[in-house]
Length: 195
Image (cartoon, rainbow, N blue to C red; front, side, top):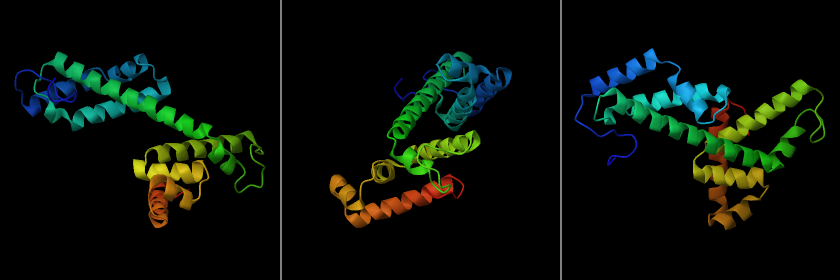
């Protein structure tokens, strides 16, 4: 494949023909991508999200397909599904590593309700707290690398902005600006909930 994994090689095809084959595949076999995600090791509850992400990626890049034959498009979509699942595994691994660092979890576990770290009044409150931490970790992992790096050092490791600036070779003002931008992005991404 000379054009990368998003291009299928073969005889020239019109984009409309490839879209038609892809549409037929997705409508005639609506659970195909979900089953493929499960077969690649995703949990069933995550497989639907992966299937939708693969379908969206296929539709976004369908103009790159050079052959409208069903086997070629099926193989191409399968490659996309494998990449989506691999991305999900990487995100999950980063999220678990971020959560395992413990600093953010300990910092948020007693926030606002007067409870000591790790102690929560009810199972429902504990579940809510964990969901907030997971959502925050996912949102942080979705930040651009430059912003994610300063957020992890500041909030995950508790470093002062001056130390972060020294470690990254930035000015203190640049670190504060990146933190401010990251907080704004996170607030919007989490429905207005500040970091």
